[in-house]
Image (cartoon, rainbow, N blue to C red; front, side):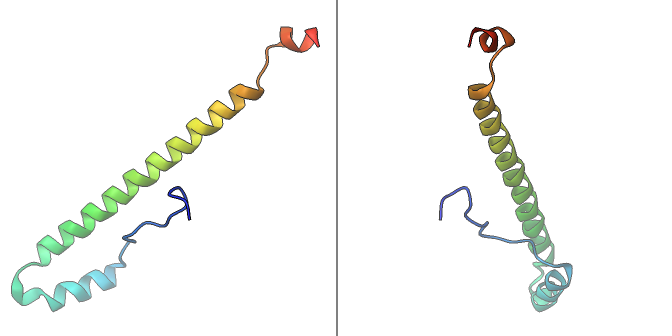
Length: 77
């Protein structure tokens, strides 16, 4: 599996699952940190997805430059 199609290591966590984890660790007073970590993971996943989209768009743009010719070049053929 190439890097481009490799799934993300950390997937989004459902809100119910976050609450369940927070309840488990409630007595250790780390629920706020857990929420911040999940928010950070969600934010980083969004950035990675945006970067992937931009890379694909740039590759498509470069590919189309290869096929694009001006009208003068077509008329010569």
